[in-house]
Length: 199
Image (cartoon, rainbow, N blue to C red):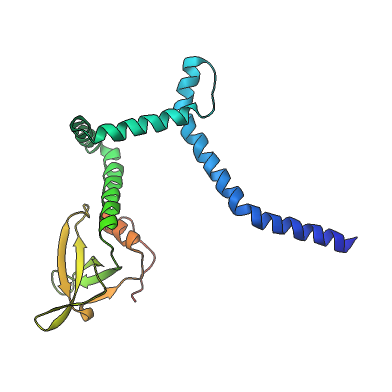
């Protein structure tokens, strides 16, 4: 009887291990769907008196598609400018809105430019350090010396910055991800990381 019980437990655990990834994924997708559906679903329920599952989610998708299409037009760009103007003047919302916008801009940059690693270098003088991003692992020979191209972004707007060329002994690779390093730059040092080692 005991071996049979152990075999059943073993099968249950095996089934749990196999089902867990798919089960958790489906649960999370369902949770997100319900949350998004509730955004507009409650309004439809008040309007027609009946709750139709998925109607709020469908309406949200249509609205977002419509907004995306309008944004590409002249009128849409003007409305986007007005939205930016409003949110950048609100005391609390301003910080959140600008941070999200800057992260979006950074993601757009990442699509076009592949940074190899985050680095720390002395700039603009000795004893003062900035975070930069190594553009290429391949050195460039200038004036008979080997230099590496490094992009140094500005705070809080990472889409602007400047390109510098440094020799290998003039910078240290940071043992943090490029995303964490960029968050540190965008937040002006407010968002930090526990990683402090250099490679």
